Each structure stands twice: as structure tokens, then as C-alpha cells.
Image (cartoon, rainbow, N blue to C red; front, side, top):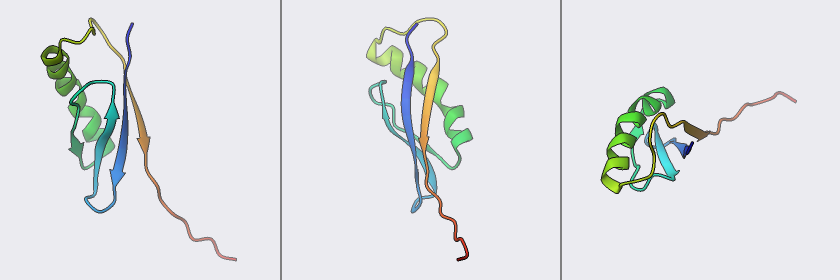
Length: 76
């Protein structure tokens, strides 16, 4: 079984999650929420696997590693 791995990152200026890197060539997309980004992935990945003739067959897990940063103000 092969595994599709991608790193998603949040862009504070654009207010979107985007695919920063992936082991699927050409996988570039963005969405307003991480859930919306995850929902887009299966269709895009299917198309890119076929286009790039990658060796993925059957049910292939997608691992999304997400990076986001926030702050908290703590009273002294």
C-alpha cells in the first residue's frame, strides 16, 4: 500500500489553507477551511495520478499534515 502525504499550511493574509508540498506532482490547491481543502483532495489526486501515470492503485490513504499558528495573551 502506498501513502499520499501532503503538507497544508494556512495563509493568514489570504485567509486560505493551501497545499504547500506533496508526493503527488502538480498537487496545488487552496480552500477557506482545512475541511474544504480535504474535501477537494480525492478528485484532484485521482486526476493527477492518471495524468502523471503514478503507481497508486485501489484504496490509497491520504495523510494531511497541517501547520497553523495562533497566539494567546496571558496575563502576568
